[in-house]
Amino acid sequence: MTRGAARLFEDLGCAVVTEFTLANGRRADVAALAADGGISLVEVKSGVPDFRADAKWSEYLDFCDSLYFAVAPTFPLDLLPGAAICGVILADAWEATILRPAPVQRLAAARRRAMTIRIARVAASRLRAFTDPRL
View 1 (cartoon, helix red, strand yellow):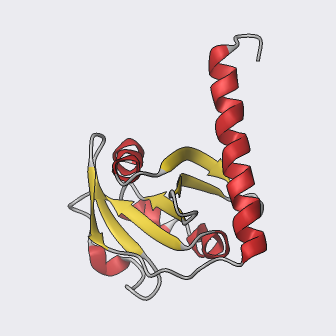
View 2 (cartoon, rainbow, N blue to C red):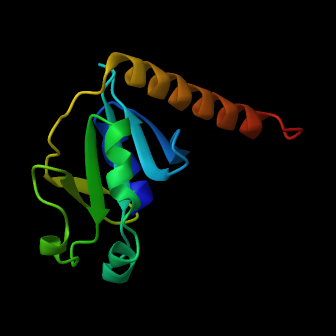
């Protein structure tokens, strides 16, 4: 489902990093950086037990303009936070679609800059490790 969500944001023109660690130590499943600088984070939930066991998603809100949950089409949507907090993506391993757009709450300029730099550095480091086996 992470791959499907990542592909969705790439199709929307975003640069995507998966398994992205935030400054608070939390790890977002997908971080998407749009051409206009907008930052979306996606929390992938494999099922109801995964959702119920993990309440850290609220700690992502300070690090993005929009937050999404990516779930399987069979996930009971009434368990997810409401439309005022997050969007909903229906996903599988190959593709995804936005069922409910996330509300946009713009980051402060300093936080946006820090997040943009962090995304760029993580992406560059991963690419470099891919091209140089020494790393």
